Length: 262
Ligand SMILES: [Mn+2]
Image (cartoon, rainbow, N blue to C red; front, top):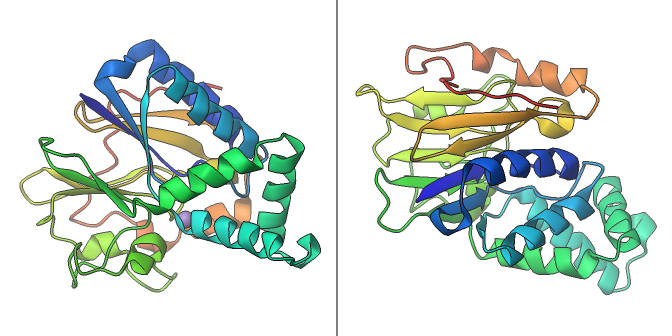
């Protein structure tokens, strides 16, 4: 079994389709499991293509697990407010534009069903997989441990400019944790002292003009497609803040069979 974890898609449906094309060429549905680590639909230009790709793959027998991101909660909240009678113009622009796009393409209801499904999985752990790993949208608080970290933190934890990232305070004792949520220009891979990967941040800022990244856990391979979105210099500058300067704990991201297309 190959677990293929895909970083924050954020409505970049074309990039998802390109990544899926690579997956379909290299893997088989009966021996693969795709894990989408959250923030599926909002911000990017083509949320309807994200809905379609998920549904199309499932029809063809691919197993797909959806992990809940903070934007799943935000979008569900916005849909709930609309249905409760709040005017669309009162919603935040990010959610309003995504909802309008989904309605225009006749797939708001399908997106809503996927969002509800995602809320059932704050963290994904493969049963009996070796080595053990956990997929969670943002991460966890190392001083509390995975189990005691509140769900809200698992979906939202993000270092401010003057803070260390949570993964710099994690010793690897709970195995490999794969996350997204904080855009980074290259996947951040942290290894514990024995060399085993203990953190991988796969949010390579597709919606900011970076890449959409996928990690094959069992093969320890990262592959990516280039974003088709304009580069958001301000956000990428943030992503390049001093917290990303390599530390003794972090080896450089080990993208040993990296492919870039698009
Ligand atoms: Mn997020």
